[in-house]
Length: 216
Image (cartoon, rainbow, N blue to C red; front, top):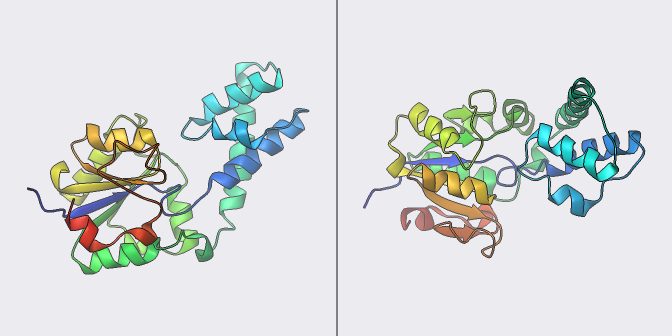
């Protein structure tokens, strides 16, 4: 049995929750186009690329835009989102996340971030925990979306660890699948009904301990 030597964390929904900012920015865009975006509709955008999200929103609103106009709208939404995350504070770290990261490092474990977000660096700086990661792999370093394991394999590579000794913390089905596809253990953060493919499911990192980690 391989001893766990590294932890790779997804960002959104695991360390912080920036979903609310995505929703606010998309909703503002929808409102400017003359319709509203419900929370139910927004749920369908989770884990979906910016381009595809915009296509869905325009479809729901019955609005047609050219490719160039769509590009401009997606860029505008991203500007609003970046403005909001630039105002984030350490209070927005999810319960237990910072404490567990510190415990991992004290235990000699390597830590990496594995996120599709291109704004990961900004978010980690704003909430004051960038120093707790040995490597940050985000949307600026990877091309293939989860469930492709690219983001986690690059994380393991930057940490100098084989995949078999890495455990991934993920809140999305595609993320858990990506970890498994990469030959890693997966801890699901969220609902056991949804994340049943994970090796362990917790509701948040405040429920995680080094003891549970080493039992994986």
